[in-house]
Image (cartoon, rainbow, N blue to C red; front, side, top):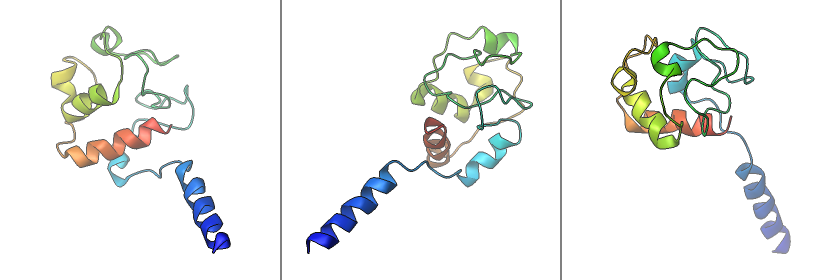
Length: 116
C-alpha cells in the first residue's frame, strides 16, 4: 500500500511542476509572437514573461505609441480584457487582431503565458 501511495504522490508532484502545453487557441498569437526567449521578437514582441510586465516594455521591440505609452501592468485580468478586445483596451495599437470572444479560450492562453 505504501508503494502505491508513494507512486501516486510522485506522479502528482511531477505533474504539478510541468509546463502547460501550448493551447490550440495560441496558434493565432504564435503567428506574430514568440515565447522562446524574452528578446526573441517576431512581428510582435516576445510574450515570454508577459504576466507581471508593464505594457510596451519588452526590451528591443518598437511598440506603437499607444501601447508604448499605455500605463498597464499585464496582470491576468488586464490580459483577459486586452485579449477580448485589443482595439478597445488600447486604442491605436498596431495589432491586426480582433480578439478572442470565448472566455475559456482566453483563460487557456493566459494560463499558458503565465508559465512562460
